[in-house]
Image (tube, rainbow, N blue to C red; front, side, top):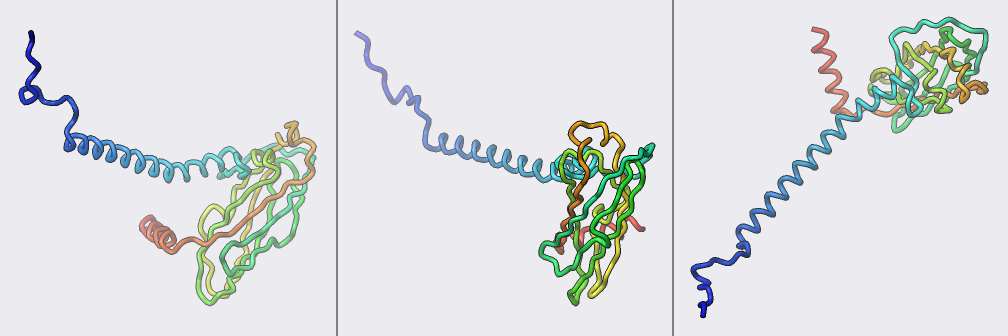
Length: 207
């Protein structure tokens, strides 16, 4: 008859508390690294997403190009301007509420911004085009919204915007019947840390 195994000569197959704790710490460390990596990817994807929207007109953002060349057609469309300010003591308005744009021909609009405070402030304008289907055909070659803007205490600044409406707008079934496009801007404050970083970058590139 076989004798039962000696428990002292055959250690238990169950993990010890020390080994179990070490395994849990290893898993926790791996999960923490995954979270950090995901956060990093999320932050990195923001500028890439913005660049994608600016290049394609996705998500209602007007396309941005350095220069545009189209063959104008006779059709015209009304471009209406909407201006907003968030958490800045600024007055912001278009010089004219609308502009008539001939498809394929450069259009020009002016926007006035006044800083009502007694200190210089830095802001950045976000923009959208409505309806969203029109964004792919609305192109800007010059705009104050391409960079941060610093306005001095009590200063008023007039910004030009040069834009085009691609003649393909007239051929797309989702935009062919539109008679009006809305270009909307909202100025947001630039956080001091980001403003300082931008100023440092500008000084470095100027050397």
